[in-house]
Image (cartoon, rainbow, N blue to C red; front, side):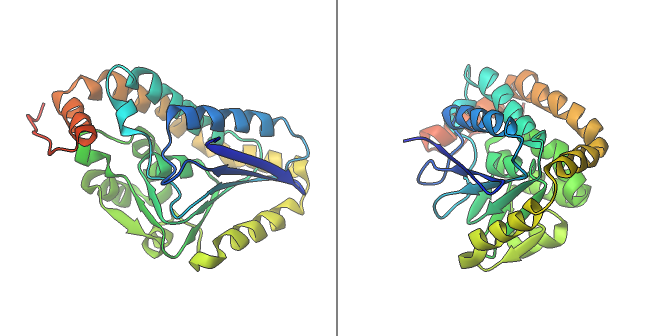
Length: 252
């Protein structure tokens, strides 16, 4: 079964993560997502894109096993490229988030223009508990929430509920769980009323202020591959998670 479902109707594209039970972002799913984004980006009739997820949870994040050596050397650049492709998508992107949106799932959502969340949604970057970091969140979260909230999420690994995420600026609006898909669809329809040409130019203009963070994204990915994964604790934290045992830190 495909890990990504794609449809287009009325100028609205839909990409739905579909990798049960918690929509883990494996390299295979990421490759499918990049392919879907490339195909939809070529559709000149498209006016808005909805990023959705099937099931109770948006995404529990990337596959921890794929962070281990030597796979991380390919996985991290692939993940960064996927997020970059979503960020550069030529029309507005709306992410509709339910349940858990953690780790790489939240980093993916950071590339959306507007985030609509269900009341029961939670947002977090738990990577620090495995002695690794979320490179994209470290780069982009401060521009969405301010440095204090970003630092709290990255340093503690604690999650935010939907209302707190809304107050922090991470989420644009919160709706009842049962209304999430309809609310996101209604917002997409409001945007889709407008000229595709104007929407594409507006999207380009809005991205002008992101030039510096965009450059920093490559640097953050390189830091992960070259510096973080050279530490003993990063390898220990990831291995301990995969092996279902407590980690033993040596703090280097």
